[in-house]
Length: 45
Length: 269
Image 1 (spheres, rainbow over the protein chains, first blue to last red):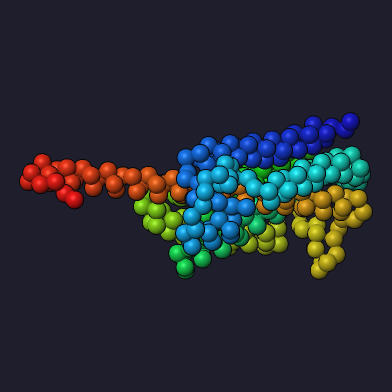
Image 2 (tube, one colour):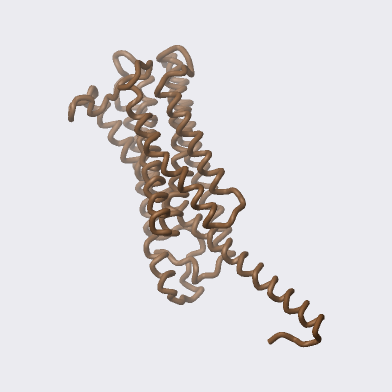
């Protein structure tokens, strides 16, 4: 393993970690707000 | 997204039974599965199958996520400017929410671009950061996006808040042009474009080019998935705001009616 691999791994972890965290926050908040909004105002398919 | 707003504008009633309980739908679930498969393929080609670069060594593997992240940050900025312009022109709430959702995702992608760029710069240039035209203009773009989001969240009347944010949103595409052209307009440490440097010619080929292509597909699918979910979340937030406003108005009217009744002894109808 060359000296650049730690930077490569760190960069990929930053990308995947940031996107995964944002996706989870968005989905969890969406579930929470969906319970508070009347059904006729949340229709998508 | 279109289905949602279209049915709202027609005021179509619906039963509670078939209403979604999250921001997901069948389409986003399919998109999500495709995104996971694409990211796994990207990891396989980007980290295992593609060779190290003759000059950069293994640091080139960072570019398979850095370049697509930057590109889709620009796409997010473009959508924000487009949405802002259409909001200012037509007062379309749909486009205002597209602009808002895109700006938040563009900010995330720009931050990721800066972070991965720094991690690429350290083994390649010997430093994490230099005040180079490309890096500085990208940092300015992130600040502009954060400014847009801050103004969009300031407590104000919704139309005033949206108008202020939309004016900032208009500045994003010109800023992206500066970021994109910075390596051509000024002497920079950052390299010049690799793809389409001279027309359709590129300074990359074989498995490295394929890994970069997979990167564009994977990050593009992820961007789309995030955008759809974030748009629906923004829609739900908007509905709750309106609901809260309706409730506050109803309470104020009830209070006023009670005061009148107490003063005159007549109960308002």
